Length: 396
Image (cartoon, rainbow, N blue to C red; front, side, top):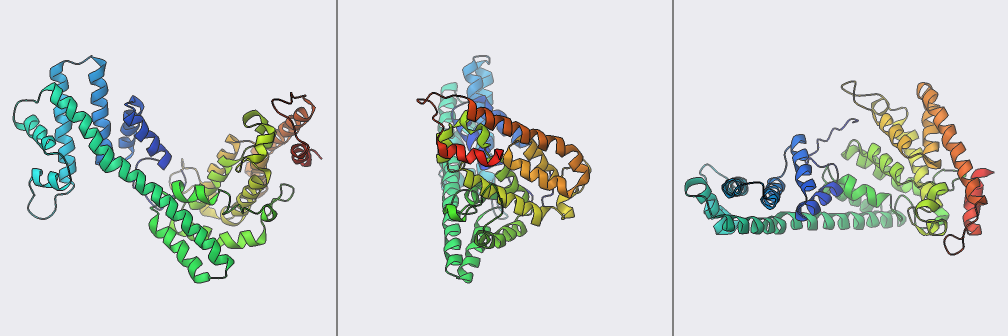
């Protein structure tokens, strides 16, 4: 991994990973439990997440029929002790500890959960039927008080970020520098260091922001340079985001690279006609993103020793290494240009990249020729003349 000055405060890599785990856990799938255990090996897991995984794991073991009733009662009881203590202990404040029952009541935790904890600690183990019922209700409580609340917060944050970005673009268009500056500052203030990859970057690389809605302002593949107005609008925010979250430049480049769809292979996935209608698949959209990648690479990465040489231990990749790896993992006409720029910058890397660049170039030409000569049934994929025009610019 490359340098990161902002330590991650959560163990999951992206919001999508968190969301998938949420769905797995409440579908009672063991994959969710395993994912949470993997998170625990990386760092501290939120108590609600750990408790959810714990109850789901015990419920799955209960269903398997491999454990005795006594073993299950022990496991459920221990789970309630840990669950209630974890919720209550987080709210203990001051010199003198408050009562477990009092704090639980203030948090809306059912009183009989506290009774189950007490019985499991001091009295006879509760009955298996009571513990099973408690497990299901504990999962419902965790869902309502953590998972749904967190999902709502994340969705609202994404909406707020998009509104602020729209406010920024409107302010720049109206020459209102104060509002533009305040919009960027507010975005930085509401996004945590671990979440800009989930909220900010996907919005930035969607139509209407780094890629303008107007196709007249987008880049052409034959040129791959940015419209001056588009470049001026977003250069300063990109600098501000990198200052706020070191590593932003690398992350947005990797996100752009992952977005590319090679038009020579588009018919295999979305069809030639539909390819033009996909916002993230249109040639003008991808050419503009490729232009941004080339611009950021040239002005922010190449020539910056921090991003082009490993920092810290020798086994860590630098930003440039990760960009090359991402391009090699998604070979297409756009990443070919990024690799060409990198090869031009670094003679050592060029020795390894030049054959690959030639291979991608030749593969694309062969694919386009095959596409133009292979007859197609009209009812499946009619190759429009406009689509052929898109492809012809690469073979001339």
